[in-house]
Length: 171
Image (cartoon, rainbow, N blue to C red; front, side):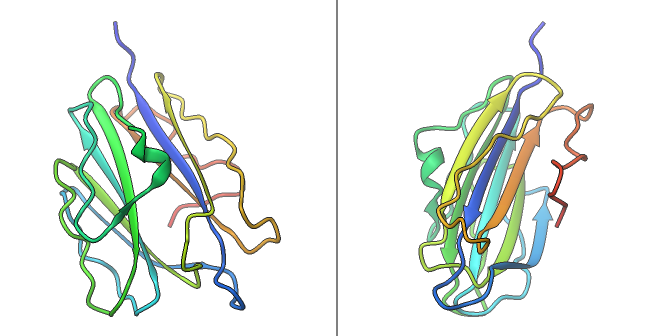
């Protein structure tokens, strides 16, 4: 029988020039293809992780967002699930998540203090068991100013998704 497929990605977000370290200021999620964004201001990084259960074709990037480059090559899953991600820099305090067509679950993070080109390194990995293995990601800024974000999606409930890697926590 086919095993459950897990999909994972890690990325680093370097700090803005002359600023402090980037920091997650808010998060929200919804069992839907869009989500109400937490409070944010112009200049904040809005990062969206979109999961699709029941289909190997990933969700579509919402209008106004930049697809995460590591995923552009295709991050279709297996055993009927897939993920996609994108980001934008807020131009006001009234941004919206947009519609991530075909997504069944969406997570939004608001990150203050990120660089104007906020994606400093990324990796995406698929697996085919109930164990989620987070891989190493090469940081573009190795001076301690990067924020490391990890996301995972899994089709099954008998997984270790609720146990983040050592040194990481949930937002």
